[in-house]
Image 1 (cartoon, rainbow over the protein chains, first blue to last red):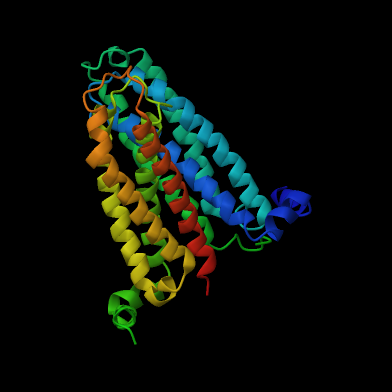
Image 2: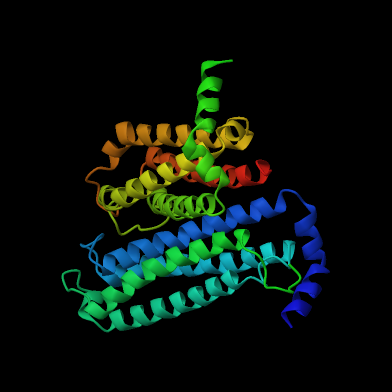
Amino acid sequence: MLEAFAAWLGKTPLSAFMAGQGWAVPSVQTLHILAIAVVVSGVVILNLRVLGVVERGQPIGALAHRFVVPSTAAIGVLLVTGLLMIASEPDRALFRTVFWIKMGLLAAAMAATAGMLAGLRASPAWIDAGAAPPPLYKGLAAGLLLAWIAIIIAGRWIGYTEGWPGSPS
Amino acid sequence: MSLVGVVIDWLQATPLSGAIRESDWLFPAIECAHVIAFVTVVGSIFVVDLRLMGVASKARRIDELIAELLPITWTAFGIAAVAGLLLFVSKPVTYTQNFFFLGKMALLVLAAANMGVFHAFVQKSVAGAPAETPPPLSARASGAASLALWIAIVAFGRWIGFTTLG
């Protein structure tokens, strides 16, 4: 099914456009990296706040209010630009284990962030900058910082690995 | 040969340069550290730029926000700079002949100059100002210039990878 999708994608005008213009792939990659910077700023500041490292004078709810919408919007940009990169070379990412590890980590990180924020919303630390968040969420915040480091490494490694044996790549 | 040329050739001949160039995993591993660090640099700078422009974090005082985020920016910048230097050392002859590499270095100098002007002249005008005060034009200009320069730095950096293949 994945091979059929890659074959179909490779025949679309979008794929021809992405592969045919020399500037298209680097431009889309630049947008992808800028969107990562936006996500990472939110991830770093929010999780370091939960850990009590930065913005200690601000309640966690106020930081979530500032960073959740831009970071989520940037993930939307990442999905679109990621799909455009796949369209430029459909056999490249889809058949590499590290790409699916990245997607799995991304889904897990987004779910864990949603869970952490829902839990913190019910704790005093959401509106009281002086209240410490429960230790469970501090652990989760540390795990999320590591998960995003792993997501970026997995993303960069797509370009350096081989596809599955027998796959089109 | 010019002095710079001699230094570049010497650098390319060092064991460190050869080790990074010839290893299958060292260059990508250093590149990962470079990417993780510089997205943190750029992301944290964007937060401050958008605050200076009066677009985001409007409930935070400008001087307080800068004091909170500057340690993150500088720590990440240190890592990005060391990792970037190691990437450069692997192929100094190639990079010093690459338009986008030289352009990126020039843009970094401009971004540093913009930051210097901000800290020397503009920051005083916003120091102690309550969050409700609209940022002065000089602060908005500093933020907009920084935003544009860092977007260009990322673009030039990405283009280096496409013009130094082989």
